[in-house]
Length: 587
Ligand code: PEP
Ligand code: MG
Image (tube, rainbow, N blue to C red; front, top):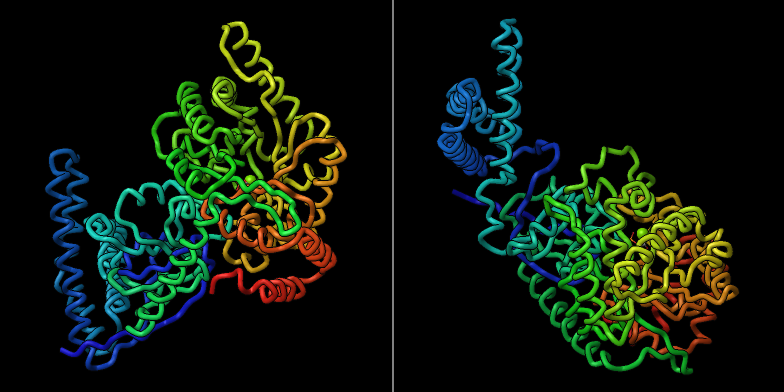
């Protein structure tokens, strides 16, 4: 039997979590399985027939196991349906028809199966008998099942549970990623997704190399294929040659050396050549990240995304759990502060136990502060937990997705009620707990002068601010090339928010992913920011860049960026700065 080695293929997606890895693909559940269609050469025919027979065998075995397990619990009519499926999986006419399409027409096994199934469906339909017409549905299910074994997407007996794999999926939610993280997951790539999606952010937090937005990677690979991915550059290589693997190994070593070199900066202050001091803080999603916060030399936590407390569980966190989580965080980052953002929950990303109804446009829907104000049974225990924890460290409280003063007033009224209650109970809390808002909607940015009158600080959330200002879905890979937080419209909004905060004499920080990009961090410092919060891993490299330039240089860059009009001009500016600062950047 001759086997033909597949050709090496290079693809580019959006690198969202750095790290270079190489391994075997584990393909999981396409939402709708597309049937690949291609001709095979004469010398591949027997191997293809064998592949078909093997998938058939696996599907039959799986079906028998399923039947044995379910027999004691299923009603008779359901067992009857499963029996029909069993018969169809053994139907010689169907099998022979598929094999014939492989042998005679030289179609790949998946397409051959599809052709055979289509013919059978036509025959059932033509018989006009209701019972037989209904069997078309069974035939469809059976062929989908068989197809999942051919494509290697069958979920049962997942090899992921046994050995390290690179997961390839159409889409992955944060909840699914957390689940998979329990197993030996080397990294993942997906068809969908953008740089600032929550799955991407979580991948960074969990240190899982990942590339998203590859559009149709699930159509090009099968379970067991070799794959290489670079989560920094977004490069993915299918069926990599030995030479490519060797090269990637040396890039990986260089990357690790660079990371180690950066670690030496851990204890140094973040100060520009001309003495301007900046605070670099960490964004945190999971309690387990506290160690990473300390390891990267962050000056505390600039954003704790508390909605992750609600993920992957059948129940809801109560006051005590909120309190314990925030107290642990507050104590572990002392003498630095930790900013607790009240939950930014939304039905599509954090569905679990909330039972929120489906929304057509969840990014513009009942999420974040709007949901908190509607669902006080969720919000009040969180506020009590934060206030109680404030007695144990330097906490700050922050509301997400504020779009106007009304929401701040309503949230603060609830906070006052909680304060009253705690005082009456004699429970300690920080009477001066700073309360701030995220500036992540254009309306909040435009109203910054008014908002500044009622709060202690701003934190600019550029992930959402860019999404809403540019009208670009941050999760949608089809528009990811247009998503530009460096866009002059976004920069102007940032500049104006900083100016309003300064005028009102309140603190202003920034906690979007933008801060994690060393070049963008330079521009932000040039615009006047002195407090940046980012994924912990990025802190050393941002510190390295800021320590290597002067504030004057950063201000010049910010001025240039503000004056630009097109994406091309932005790219040119990036390239020229990158060249000027080349020694500071890794390959
Ligand atoms: C932001 O929108 O910039 C932000 C930091 O919040 P999140 O990414 O959690 O929406
Ligand atoms: Mg946001």
